[in-house]
Length: 200
View 1: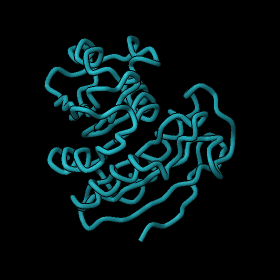
View 2: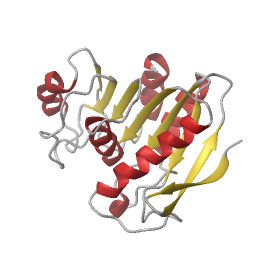
View 3: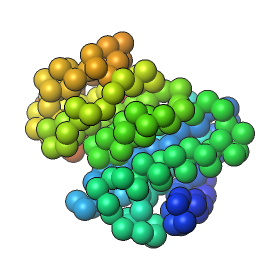
């Protein structure tokens, strides 16, 4: 059962949904762009959450500052990085040492920035990193990057652009394309679930 919690991030109260798993691993899961309706209840965020829970992870979804009941205002993702770090610290304070990050679209970008700035995690998963919309060229090596999933018809996260950036992130990461899917995976959620369940 998910528990509503409050996380302190730079003096702001950030809302989260925590579900404790039976294992010793934990993951922070982040949502798409808040200015376009993204929040922690997004169906792809929920899909990520289910996939990790099936592997007995503790899952922590958060609403970035300025989203839902989280305090503060949107500021181009800068504060959102602090929110990610605060959420990771929350899991760490629960005694979870094996920490992962997973994000969809804008959330994948924020997570990548946090990792580039030194967030200590074991594994990262990106669903539809929006390389066609946001500049990812400043993001350095992502040694923890394990899996990237994108739809073959996604013009916000074009697979060809992701493939060109991948050597600078982590050439050993798995890049999985879902044929026929666009950025929102409408009609392709079962395929997305299957990929996540197989690779997480």
